[in-house]
Image (cartoon, rainbow, N blue to C red; front, top):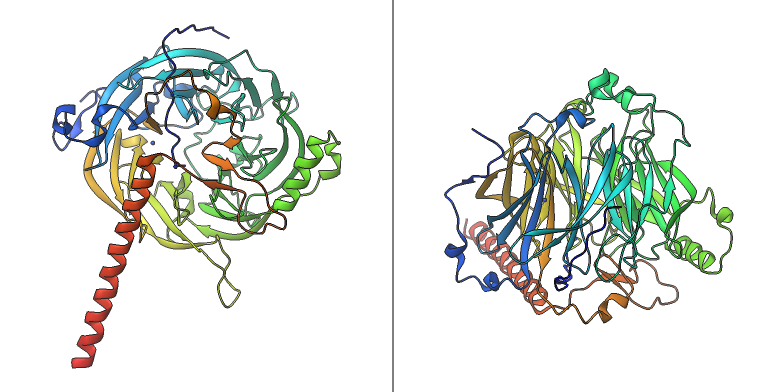
Length: 543
């Protein structure tokens, strides 16, 4: 570990209710925005402002896949976002390509103004970098650790903010690194490692050594991609924080691990299950997301272009948590799954060739009403409406999905996207066209509309939302709250059924005002629909 000392005051951020010519230079279209042009904006006092941390690829030879855009000379950018028109202003550029190579996943600390990013390299171990992000957008590096594996692709912070868990795609390893709860700095190197290959050598070769390009999705590429396990994410359950879900793209499995919260380690593997319908075709699970209100989880399958919907066994999760607290052996839970598949739905039109598409990100909108998936190849966002109740016929289930539509992202290979703090704007990283584009999001219909704001960024691969505020670092009482990310855990009631004991809460005035604005817009939209229906009825009556 490389130590970093910083005597400047601690900056903490407002808890968000959310759940990202020379192409290395940034331009803006249409027109160049300046900070002065937004002088009257309420958030221009740099308190509770919305920043976005955007990363870029810089060395394509070190990747398993093959970007087609321009390599970045600098790999880190910070933008300020303006909610009145969806505009972005570039505040800061950092990360020379020789020093910060291929940062491709970032995580904002749930309580501190610290952002973590990890580098992607299939030959050398990745690095995990920690930056304090200042209110002016500048980045102060406060730490760096070895990721313990190759092609680092995912970062998770556990419930108590005492550990950061990293996932390495190429060699599939999972590692746990201790964090300072008060500063967010690394307290030491890796203290726990899980290797699903059990020390065995990789079978598939890297791209530059005759291996396949993982951007492709033909049969020969899939055969090579699935010779080895490839962990792609790790998500802790939001109810107890004791089960880690790991999509394994290489083996078409979702792995369920016991996470030892006390020791901060990946414990035994409890269960594995298919990530889809097991049709005989590859699924390739990539990311895993929980619904914020229902006992439901979603898995996006990169290779089959599907979303698999699972119900969650809350009773089993509670049983595992109780056993762990009493120091009982976990062997009793092996072979028992907390997940049950209830739906699979395509992310591309039925007639579109699956081999021409791979899925990128999946996201559940903070309202819990929509699920969004990016399609790389179809160059679109697939948007689904979440069913909010069981159907009267019993054929539909709460949390399952219905298609809203497909929306072009105005670029190629939308690897990632991110909502702003309010959930009313969505920013897409179009990796292979070197652009990020901003869309407004209709909170009633789920449809998106291009805002007219587009920015040149070399090979953008991730957009991290960073809503921040300046606070006195001396008051740390809030750090003792039991939280997972932005979830505040309430006392569990007996015989709880479908409503989790964790709910999305943000007590800030700005968050309440944002929710009020959302409600007003939904009411206005419903009034328009009712008015339209009334006019139609009157017309029919007259005729």
